[in-house]
Image 1 (cartoon, rainbow, N blue to C red):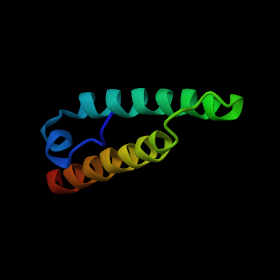
Image 2: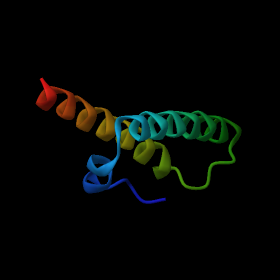
Image 3: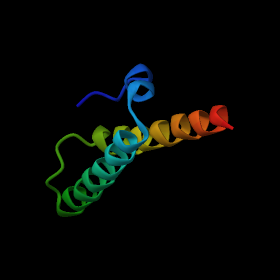
Length: 68
């Protein structure tokens, strides 16, 4: 799975962003378990998931700041 694009994140509603963050956190949790048990094949996906979460949270904060 490729990193999420900023344009796609900006097009999401607030609820969709929250759902995306929750699903990425679940994925990251599962990836950490796979790494610990030696089953993780794509190690870069951990980094991508972490950065996707940060990207979504940053854009959400920017949109909240614009609404004020």
